[in-house]
Structure formats: C-alpha cells, structure tokens
Image 1 (cartoon, rainbow, N blue to C red):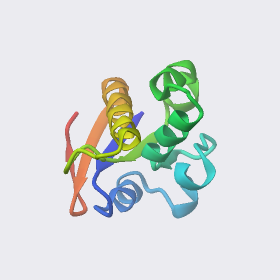
Image 2: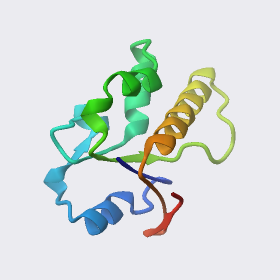
Image 3: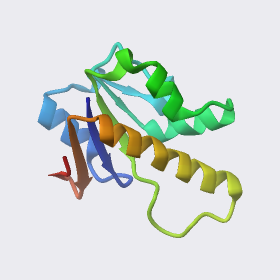
Image 4: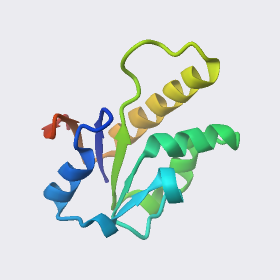
Length: 124
C-alpha cells in the first residue's frame, strides 16, 4: 500500500494519477460512496474516519481487521491536522482519530508521499 497525504486542493488526486497512471474511474471516493477496494485507489479517508466516529467504530481497528482488502492499493487522505485546534469536541475527535489512522497506515505503507502545491515529496 502507498499512502498520499496533503492539504485540501493540493493536488493529491492528480499526483496519484500521474504517479500510478490512474484514470478518474480508478479512484474511489470515500466521501461519496464509501471505501471501494474494487478500485486500486481510494481518496478522502478523512471522510471514512468521520463515518467511523458516527457509527461508533474505530477506524484503525477496521483497517487492521480488513487488511487483505487494502494492502495492494493507494490511499489518499486530506491532512486535517494543521491550523487552529477546532473548538467543537466532535471536530477535535475527528482530527485526532484521522491522525491515529494516518500514523497506523504510514507505518504499514511501502511508500508515503506528502503533496504540496502539486509536488509530491517522498516521506518513506
């Protein structure tokens, strides 16, 4: 699995398409349809984390339990860790849980890229 992270509208999807040769049809959108591991790439993992919180599930445990589904994929997540700490407890929890998932996935990933202004920097 490869992991791509970066801020909103920084070019993560375009980077993945160029790096791996994906088309738009190859990229599942967790914010719209949930995770779709029939596709080689999934974006908006932060939306999946939000859904996990809503359904009282632990996103890290879910990924650990379903490891065989995602080990050969590319995962894209918006980095929501920067900026001002949210005032609402729910938003802070979302931020923390997304961070925990990214730590887990980064540890499991073969490659990790951070995309800023369309430029991908290899972190791992």
